[in-house]
Image (cartoon, rainbow, N blue to C red; front, side, top):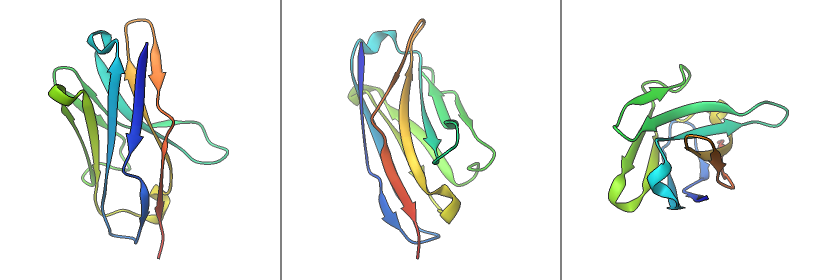
Length: 115
């Protein structure tokens, strides 16, 4: 079992920045990758960015050059630095942990980009 707690969401103006955090606890040794997903009302969750235990990253085309995923293994935490935010980035962001046979989700943190 893995527990994930997200934080850092909030309200920002277009062009602003936020940094999301996701702290993992539990059976963390089994995690081989973690990622950030987002889900707008009426839509399926979509990958925003992911990072493996070895540090390899992957990004959705819509956020490349604006978002950066990183990790702090000592703190069992991943981050999503979001710059140049756009109104279309507004939604709930979820942290996900990848295990060999399981996936675990956080509760989500809301990001609102509006003037």
